[in-house]
Length: 328
Ligand code: FAD
Ligand code: NAD
Image (cartoon, rainbow, N blue to C red):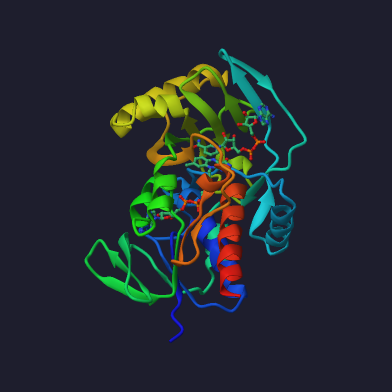
């Protein structure tokens, strides 16, 4: 019997692995606890249009990723974003232009993972709670008590804290994943009926509850009915205010935004808050991916490299390479 490979997680890492294995002619099945793909690159549909609440843009530095991003651009999945960039330090706002190429999904961040998923078989709204091996094959158990399988291999492509529990069959891998600390990020969107009188379109922020803000309509193809801004709190502030009610988070980050943006900020007509519990790994690693090749259990994700889109994509490629090498 030729059993398929199960991949848990349809973020960019899981889909990067899925693409590479599919291209090599292997059968795969994907699972995600969410209703759609993308994970931290997902976009939220809202009354203010589609909003990128997680990854804001990405850069490509590794040659392999540069090449794939060029292909994505040719297919219309991504576009360059050239915001009016600023930096805010000690409450002082200053223009901070640079030459860095920055990419966004087009017309929304989730366009990339949606396109990568294509027609690959996937089960959404399916939280995997257990990964276990019989004599030869792997099975998965979900939160509803259903089992899935058999599978020849399992790739876990979730954030590290979620991966460690699913890696119980390989204690060394589980231990490595458990050692990764992932920091939270509160994200807030504010929509204004009248555009704010500012040239700021993206801003790196220091010494504030915020660490980033972006003007949604400055990204290519976005809805521009409202002037909507996405604000990210710093890891420190997010950790300190992890359980603050959403309304209070919106109020405090709105206040910080009004203080630093340097123009009049009216009450927003649209607000939204989202808490990313596992937003970014506290440290980078050089693992590429985790593998117990004899067992057939693997893990990948941004936390195996750098906590960026590029790191996650490269980790997915690495896990697929290791699995394919072991099959030869
Ligand atoms: P994820 O995207 O987290 O995917 C994991 C998937 O696994 C999710 O879809 C989840 O639903 C699923 N899952 C988890 N547990 C289970 C389970 N038990 N069963 C089934 N499915 C499960 N990177 C940049 O390069 N530039 C940026 O500007 C940037 N900004 C960011 C801002 C924020 C607020 C956040 C949160 C992240 C940002 N990042 C940025 C980081 C980037 O988004 C991530 O590095 C990348 O998207 C991680 O991809 P991944 O596939 O490793 O994990
Ligand atoms: P990048 O090169 O644009 O930014 C890297 C870092 O360099 C920035 O965080 C910023 O501190 C600094 N920087 C870059 N250009 C600047 C400029 N013109 N003026 C002032 N400072 C500048 O992109 P990257 O290396 O791909 O990093 C990805 C970004 O994603 C980072 O900003 C990172 O903080 C962010 N991120 C955020 C989260 C989260 O949870 N909020 C998670 C992962 C990544």
